[in-house]
Length: 403
Ligand SMILES: *Cc1c(COP(=O)(O)O)cnc(C)c1O
Image 1 (cartoon, rainbow, N blue to C red):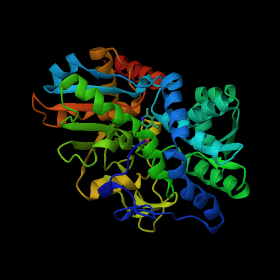
Image 2 (image 1 turned 180 degrees about the horizontal axis):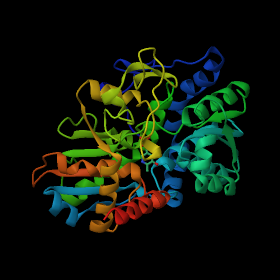
Image 3 (image 1 turned 90 degrees about the vertical axis):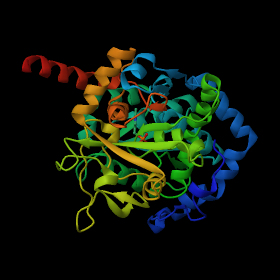
């Protein structure tokens, strides 16, 4: 859990510069305020810290390795390191956050957990910790996503969660989020809402970033051990809502010599109309409870995003990242669907690691960064590719028949 650092930490109202805050319906105010008043005390308590650290070590499998990728380094012409979040239990970084929030929920005396999920990755991470703690778990998921992501729906059910379909709107992630919020309004006393990224009303973006900060906490001592210096020249991470990036950046935010690089999903091309390049195409507005950058039309209606990777298929970006981008602290790149798939195959053949499609976006831009031989670059490998095998195989079949 990170120490807050002034320049990039939120103020009392949860603002990172111009972005953040808590834009919520009156009926949710008490729930959110209850968490806001207690979260820092709870997660700062030594007994919380001990339980959180023990679970991360013995259950999640932390610390995850920092791996020097020799063959990839030679090809790119720079020193490339991978932070292996793909080796976490459940296959991605998301569990760092759900472990933290389930321990918080217990200390708030909550008996029932709700969550929203798009592709099902956050739903699985939430159902996992609910099984671990014996708490009731309800996951809202768009009806369209339930059909597209059958294996994750089965995982959640096997873990004992109830998966409730969201039947309104486009029947995808934003509709599932609306259903979860409705549930929370109706069950204010016994229910905790586990949000899956650094989005939502204050204090969620700050709280989730603190739970993911373990990533950069480990990177610092691992880098020191491997190179004699805890700071790399660059840290690169893909960004959907921004939780893996926030975790990888957290303890480096004030080390201005470390350049921070975010990679968004350009879908079929940034200006193709089928993209999720939120910060590049987006403008300031309110989504899911916070002021941030989002894709919207001239009337302020959310524009449906598109990405081949479900985890990056989100029309907004966390307020911390909006601030990092606007202040010039972080730089943004975008990779298309095709570039991401290419990069996934490339990593697999070069290093024997099959990455998640989300992660593959971060890998895709390395060759465009104009890196120098001596540059040390840490890429956050946010997740593994098992869940994406169908997409990868479809692509291979298509390519073979094209030849
Ligand atoms: C969910 C997910 C992401 C995107 O979410 P962030 O909050 O931006 O990290 C990235 N990679 C993987 C593997 C994911 O499952």
